[in-house]
Image (cartoon, rainbow, N blue to C red; front, side, top):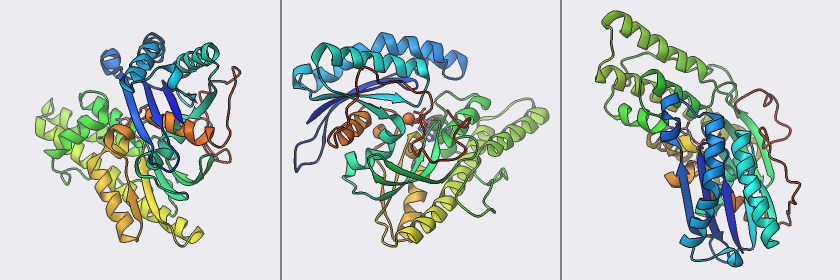
Amino acid sequence: LTVLGIESSCDDTAAAVVRLDAGQAPQILSSVVSGQTDLHAPFGGVVPELAARAHAERVDLCVEEALTQAGTDLNGIDAIAVTAGPGLIGGVLAGVMCAKGLAAATGLPLVGVNHLAGHALTPRLTDGLGFPYLMLLVSGGHCQFLIVRGEEDFTRIGGSIDDAPGEAFDKVAKLLGLPQPGGPSVEREAEQGDRRRFALPRPLLDRPGCDMSFSGLKTAVLRERDKILAEKGGLTRADRADLCAGFQAAVTDVLAEKTRRAIGDYLDLRPHAPSLAVAGGVAANTTIRARLETVAADLGLGFVAPPLSLCTDNAAMIAWAGIERFRHGARDGQDLVARPRWPLDSTAPALIGSGK
Ligand code: ATP
Ligand code: FE
C-alpha cells in the first residue's frame, strides 16, 4: 500500500509518499517540506491570506517533487491522503482542492486526515508503537494529553486551558526580537542563559489534574523585559539568553509535572501502560524531550519521541494517518470538507474558541 500525503494547514506546504507492505515496517519514500518562514517574517507571525496563496502556488510542485524523490508517479500510488483540518482554512482548502483534483483525474481513492491525528499517530510510523499509548501532543496551536486507543479513537484527559506552548515560544521570541519560528530561536538562546536569574511562574502547578496554562508565563516574561528596558534602555545578549532559559525551564517544569500526573491518571485506567509518546513541534525541544523521558522512566513507562523533522509539520505523518484510516476502510469523496476546527476527541469540552 503506497499513499501520497498532502499537508497545508499552517505555514508549511508538504507532500510525502509512505509505503506499507504487509508484515514490514512502514517506509517513508519521500518527505518534501516547503516552509514559508521568510514570507511571514516581516509580519512577526503567519498571515493567513499570504499562507493560502503560497500553498496554492506550491502544492503541485511539492507533490511532483515527492513523487520524483520516491521514484514513482501517480500510477504507483494507491490512495491520496490530505489534511482536511484543523488549521488556517485557506491553506487547508488549497491542499484539499489539489487532492480532489488528483483523485478526480486518476480515479484514486481520497482519504481526509485530521492534522492532529497525523501528529498523534506519528510514533506508530517511526517506532511501530502499538495501541494504546499515552500521548502528549504539544505544538504551535495545541497542547493536550490523549489516550490513543485506535486510529480514530482519542480521549483527551487534559491540556492547556489557554495558549499552546509553541505559541508561547513564538510570542516570547517576538517580544525579545528573536526570529520566528520562536521555538528553535528561544532554545538556542537558552543554551547560553542562566535559568535561575528570573523567578518566572509555574502556572496551575498547585492545582490537581493535568490541565495547564501558559499565557501568564508569557506575560511574566514581558514584564521582566519591560523592567530591564525601563532600567537600562535595552537588552543585552545575556538578558535575552537568561529570559529564554528561565522561560524554557518554566515550560519544561510545567510539562514534566503535568505529564507525571497524566501518567498517574492513565495508570489508574490501565495499570500496564506501555508507553508515553510525544509529538508536535515543541517535542522537537531537546530539554523538554529529555525531561519527559526521565519522567516516563521514573514511572516505568517506555518513551517514544519521533525524530525532529517528523515532530514539526510534514506530510509523511498525513500519508501515514491516511494509511491507518484507509486500511480500515475509510474513503472520502469529492464532498470532503475542509474544517478550520476539528477536535480529535469529539467529546472534548472547551475546544470551541480555544487555540486554533
Ligand atoms: P498545530 O499542529 O497545533 O496545528 P502547528 O502545525 O503550527 O500547530 P507544529 O508545526 O507542530 O505546529 O509546531 C510548530 C511549533 O513548534 C511552533 O510554535 C514552534 O515555535 C514550535 N517549535 C519548533 N521547534 C521547537 C523547539 N526546538 N522548541 C520549542 N518549540 C519548538
Ligand atoms: Fe502541526
